[in-house]
Length: 76
Image 1 (spheres, rainbow, N blue to C red):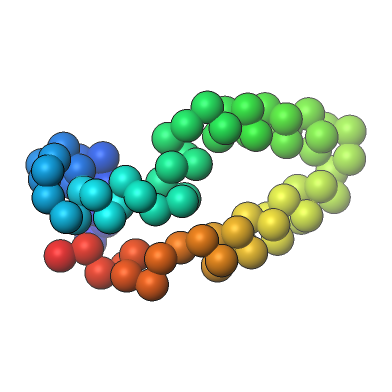
Image 2 (cartoon, rainbow, N blue to C red; image 1 turned 135 degrees about the vertical axis):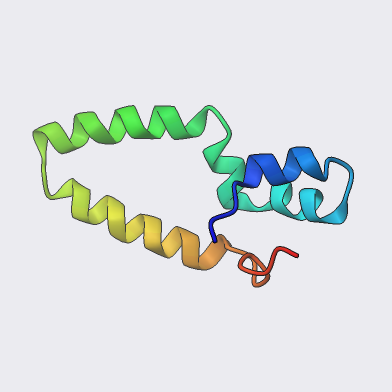
């Protein structure tokens, strides 16, 4: 079952679940100005240097491994 984090936060606006999700670094990144800026910048870099896609994927995996909270998969 796929859970939409935004819908979950709206449904539980003042609950501990919403606060935990909203505090997760990946959620903060994906809902800020940084995501579109990073995406556009990466697209430009990949256009001129295609192997940058592999480097970006590796960096994303490392970022997610280091910044995802241990209870990220247990939203009850």
